[in-house]
Amino acid sequence: MSIPLSIKWDGKRLIILDQQKLPHEVVYIELEALKDVYEAIITLKVRGAPAIGITAAYGLAREAQSYNTNSMIDFLEILKKDATYLGESRPTAVNLVWALNRLLSVASHIDNVQIAKQVLIEEARRIHKEDEESCRNIGEFSLSLLKDKTRVMTICNAGSIATAKYGTALAPFHLGKERGKEFEVFACETRPIFQGGRLTVWELQQSGVDVTLITDSMAAHTIVAKGIEAIIVGADRIAKNGDTANKIGTLNLAILASVYGIPFYVAAPSSTFDLSINTGAEIPIEERKAEEIININDKAIAPSNTKVFNPAFDVTPAKYITAIITEKGIIYPDYIENISAELLNSIEKGEGL
Ligand code: MRU
Picture 1: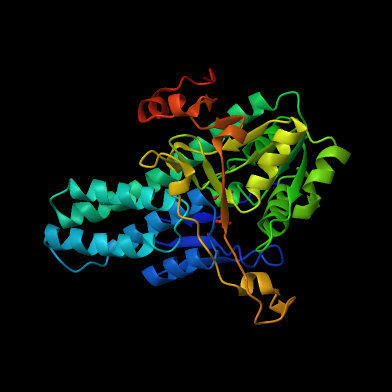
Picture 2: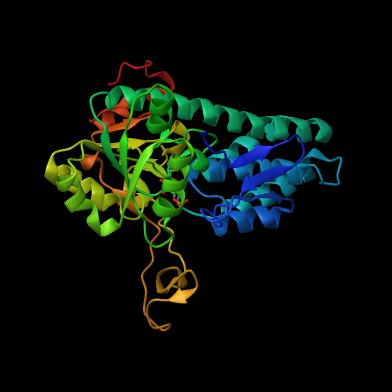
């Protein structure tokens, strides 16, 4: 039993787990050209907010090794153009532009092209390593919140394969397993791309966590019938007031948690906070192709000319969120007061707010 990883860097090559092929095949592929990285992100071969950021960082740093110039001005210009290109692959997860901006920022402080190339690789590795540490801490804080609870529901895949390791919402289950705490996880299948059924179930099975699959429409009944004690989800972008974008269907679960009086937790690293926006109304929501809804496994389940609305994410208003679990500590309402740049840098470990 082991926790699966989705991104590997061997010093020169960027290798990712092709999540499109799960759970049937476990295939790792190398991403070489920048357009391969863009394509892998847009087609969800690699997905999940932190994993997208890490992949883009390695992709950009790797591409920069081939820039044929000794002028730092030209180097930065090409770097910015490539970062903009990758940054447009998916609009909702803020970790993508956050990671690319980190690379642009470190390069802008260097005045030698050869050194800049080296520094970019180091920064991408740092982003990767930091995310693993963040997820481990999120797991610790989540375990402290879930200490007397075992039956937990989740949606999408906010797991190890959506991050560097451990995941955010799934981190307590992996860590709990290591320590002998047995959770019963209920995974919503997550239409239309089935990240819950294909990825979360597979991932938790890999590390021996007890997981039960339900369809999204079974959530309300399951909360009652199985005595669900908490819901925990990941996030793609969190506004200053705590409003949180996450996979479509998350809002339904938050409303159900409120109706049934169970806690609704969001687990996310500080790289998922966007302090430039005040509320969730400012979060861009990705709309994806109609085919994702009309077809399942390339087989039509509705007429091919069906009119479709396919938003990939929804925004959960902060009022439904019991707490936001970050790598630095647990943030409680009032979020407008408690989420701030200072706070993200300074919350005391374990203290909560
Ligand atoms: O479209 P996806 O699969 O990239 O959506 C992923 C999610 O919504 C996750 O919950 C979120 O990115 C957090 S991953 C730790």
